[in-house]
Amino acid sequence: MPERLRGKAHGPSSHTALLWDLDNVTAGVDADHALGKQIIEHCGGSNLLYAAGHRGTYRQHRLMLAAIGITVISGGLRSQGADRQLLHYGHILARRGVSILVVASNDGAFARLPVETGVTVLTLTPGLVSKRLRTRADAVVALHHPGQPFWATTTDPQGV
Image (cartoon, rainbow, N blue to C red; front, side, top):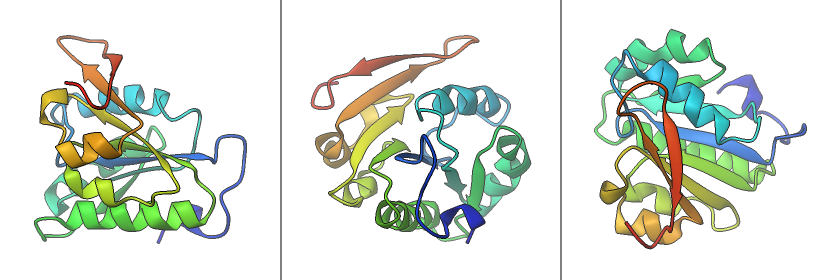
């Protein structure tokens, strides 16, 4: 487990953490570096930045995203391995005092994040955010990328 998860979260922006499902929200390997920078802007300066993906995705993204401060975790070969890893981290972060989880995913599995945390969902495809996750979210932010640079629009979590 990364050193950043040990002990209580502290620092000016430690109330917010990122959980990015690389298997679910991606602009493609060549554009994910720029997407990562945009996603980080929604994390309030936090250094608690985690992404996970299937083993192949992990290998493609690990060094590229580490260069911008995101710790990438391998989800192994299991079909929901990245989701399981990120949910595990979400529960640990909540116990350490993180109160807002920024989740880059469309997957309903993230509706199981701790109820004491706020959840902001970032997505490239707002119409594909699961109903369970949309219901759990305090906000859904639609990231758009018709060209560089990326930009974002906040939407009502209950609407599309």
